[in-house]
Image: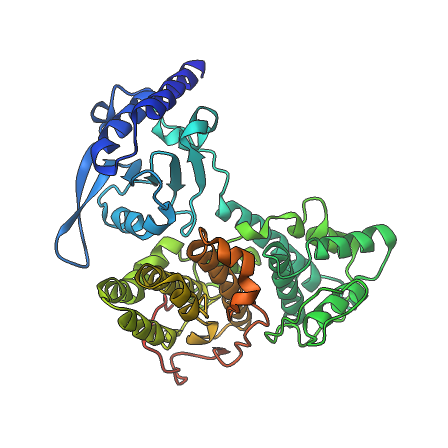
Length: 496
């Protein structure tokens, strides 16, 4: 591999000395040199095409992808300094329409970073980000560029983390429902406890609970013989209490509400069950910021091995397939309106309408379609706010941006005939609010020191993701074939 490393170092030196980062003028040279660095004679010799025409399925005309190398890779270049996350939708649409032999991987590049996507595994975030300056050390993330393709090694594979977390929590559920009869939990109680733990572990890692809350509780039970019944239920009762604890173990635990913590489960966990939650390799040791809510619920249900899954017509719908529904139904019409707006008044009127827009999935399962719809509508709101930020003064923008993320879980509705699926869908939507808010803050105020220094003085509403919205009236148990549907402006889903 020393020859490959030296070749990549030569590429890095060339980029540093000769590439200014002009999207139009230098992309082709950059890409050809990249192919040479990975052992090809050039991009043409490898079989790749520059400025490949891609027909648009939902509108007239064509687009041009910077490079396509079927069936391996699509690369879209942007100028140096460009925020690549803002071009995610364009890259996804190119990939979606690059048929037949759609490329497996997609790279967004701004001459300094490679954002690598595997849309069949995960959307939303790249599976890895590799800087040009570290390419000679991190080239295994681009193993698919070698003349003889190898499996890439990614550092942000959320699907793998999601699968591990789902398996561990499903195993806990199975253990609780297979105990000896005298100690066995009902399915409903086992589901409630596992979902309470899921929310708590997410909350730890997205800064809604003090770090290590669950891990510490499990450690005290395993090492000091303390009661898991007392410690876990004490935590859940505090999460359901409006008055905060001023002292003791649960000081600093905020009010969560959401309905999930209104009841606790009367159970004492054994050593094996505690290990599944908080052992060295337990669920709480996972990085829950990398657990993907868009697929976690389905993975969780599948890991439980439900016998009724086939009877209910349930199957896994990939995130890319969900986007194929959500994109033309929700994203593109709103995006066209936002991009065509010509004044502050127009943008604010669109934002008001967006905040009143309701989405229904009449066979929602564990809420995957609703979560993706929420995330994409939040990004539409962010796109609108970015345009507003360019249109008005900073003072006026702060005045108008009181709601950082204007989309609410209460705009989303679901029906399903599986009780556990309904509860999972509520949990998924509850998490969406916090995750969307954090993404909006990072984008809107990334370069705004005043916001970082004085968020309290600015008084932004919606800064706190808590308490969670109670979604009992939004996502309900029923049969969409016979029950009345809630009013909605858009219907998404994958009915059985």
